[in-house]
Image (cartoon, rainbow, N blue to C red; front, side, top):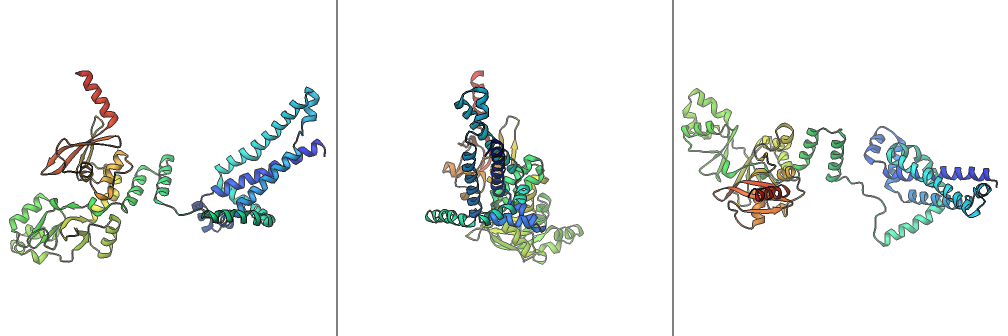
Length: 436
């Protein structure tokens, strides 16, 4: 075989190697979500690619057989292919062989491996759809050899109890990663990004993170006077009020402001002296073990938008409305982020209300997780857990690069925390020492 024929054969081997390299990367890297959309549109090749991805054993075996055969043939044919020509000009057989070897090897690295694989990484779905049919045909042609090698590989996987196919389940983390990537690329807007994050947070947050707590509930009793009712409505203009027989734990029902206000405006005071007449007894009562997502389902099933939350001892721990859940879902989109509970100060520190949900604090401070966070729901609960005591004013802890300090306590209840990033705190301390 002459030099020209050898060069043509080497070029042919480079093309074959490029085919296997592109097929290997593109079929493995093609995203199932995009392929499934193409399948729904009637694309048969997309269905073939998904099938290969679901059972990749024969596919990868064929690729490796093809690449190794090409490598062996290239080594045999390309051995010193350019040496005679180069040797005529430099007169040194060893250097001529080395130059020939580097040239042939470089061509395979560049054109049979590097460029094809980079193209396949950039356009995985498009190239996979183009190569799936010839790849399927190659697998059929090499079936006897593939059967032997693939069988041995399957046996090894079985011995080590390893699955033969990849897990295609999509987790919350996968979706978050896609959304984050979309936000960085500008495809997903900031508001849409926050909304998607909040939707998944509904599955993780308990109802207590969005409820009105027991000590903040404004309620009427069956013996409530007209004057007291007017005063409470004037001071707390809620849309619905809890109605109890005597105390907060003796639940009777709830009443809407729209049922009370017309009577007040018309001067029908007699109607207010017996609040039973306008109380709705079909009150939704739920345990405090529900998530906000489950709470939405309960509201939908009951066709109600107001619920009372009880603990395991049947004591009222709070009330929640549909608007509370929706506000949690839409908070970052419609309202300034945690405007009431988390305030960022000019010096880079944060003032945080004690009842702020830990999920909101993690989001603002970019903290991955709090320790044993299933044991509490608010930042005040976090402080109590870390200190192992009822915190007093001035109590502080260090966690994840932040300093958490109690700055206000009201009757054993943490009202406010001051949070300072440790780097910022160190700079401030240094500046104070220099001033002294």
